[in-house]
Amino acid sequence: MQNRPHTRHLRAVTLFLLLALTPVVAFAAPYAAFVMDARTGEVIYAQNADTRLHPASLTKMMTLYIAFQAIQRGEITLDTDVTVTRNAASEPPSKLGLKAGQKIKLRYLLRAAAVKSANDAATAIGEAIGGSEEAFATRMNRTAAAMGMTNTTFKNANGLTQDGHLSTARDMSVLGRHVIYDFPQYYNLFSRRTADAGIAEVRHTNRRFLDSYPGADGIKTGFTNAAGFNLVASAQRGQERIIATVFGGTSTAQRNGKIKELMDMGFAKAPASATLNRPEPPAAAPAPAPAAAAALMASNTGPATNGGAGKTVRVSGRVTRSLRPEARPMQAAPAVDLAVDTDMINSVLAEAVQVAAVAPGAIAAPGSIQPQAPEVVTRISTSGGRHWGVNVGRYNSRYDAEKVLLRVALNEMSTLDGAVRRVTQNARGFDANFMGLTREGADLACRRLQARNQSCFMIGSEG
Image (cartoon, rainbow, N blue to C red; front, side, top):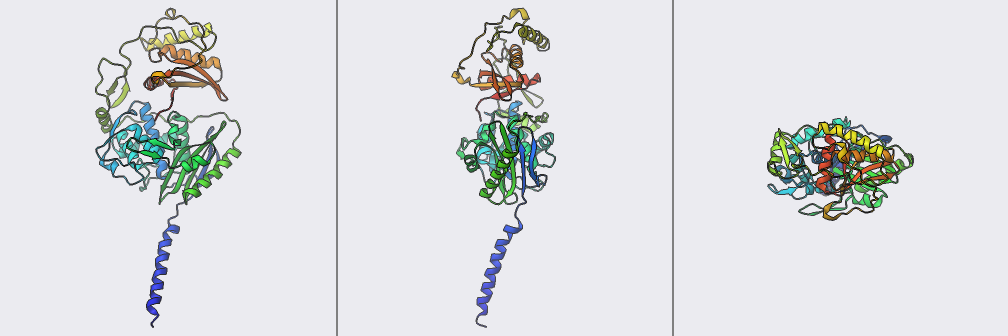
């Protein structure tokens, strides 16, 4: 009888320990994995790849993708001052530490979301672009559907656990591939070990994997109790690029170890050479919601006037760039890095004149332009911040790349003033580039070229 209190105490302790340990087993996140050859989109390995699971902060890849898209389309700029809402400031960690009413440039929010995986920064991005997190989630879902992410539903911009906020290992790999190929000018964000986020220096959540796996350069980690330890990773070795995704890791170390195994499998099975089959960028997203348009009206440059170059014009909630108000005097086309091909020049001039009929003022009559003597470019000046460029495509021959460069130069002479045409050969073809632009000049050139259905992306280091 005297031992009963002691026995009851032991039983209570045992029961407490059992209850304490039970959630670890009962709530272990389901596991899923996927491996893809990023160059072709071919599947190398899949396990539970279409099971809808909690993505956690892998969600932020879509938030950042739409932010890059909005910058490209003129809806917002890297230097837009975003006003932090109480909702964004109240998000739980991981967070940057934003305060309600604080103003912070979009570029810092992007860095915090990509590098530190800050939930408050991701929410602030979504609200700045969508007008509200709900409206932004609608845009996320439309973009996901356009990418072919058929088993994904987003409810928020940061990935915190919410009923119905689900994705799959396959869909997140598809999203990661779009981030890499649709916005190469911003992809470097995902491999920065540290970054200046305006109010703090932030450190990368995935630096252990980035530092330990050769060729690793991204992309995004995620963790919640419901999701487990998630990771979409990418690495490049020579011409090969592999994307591997894990959902439901049991720890950072276990997840990273599994990703390394999957990556090794990918590089072992992927062919040494393959034809690059870039994913098709999703169709144009819907125009900004009225609230978002109003926010941009307040935070960006004031109403456009008839003076000044590159002013912002807003019509019916859409944001676009005006043309330069005064056309510059006609100048000779920039020099080409090879002997002048007169047949090519005549062909391109004829094509440019046809374009000029649609866009008056783009070019004068052919007789007013005299081709210059050939010149070899040995160095591009980077003074004055002119260290940006634009890529207008990859072609099968140097001739085709040069022809496109000349046509584009003639059609966009005022925009590309001072740029140097350069063809860069690599194992996949001939890249047609204009170099020696300012960031603003490169951005404006791409907008105008995309309006003509000419593919274009910026080259440079930004973010």
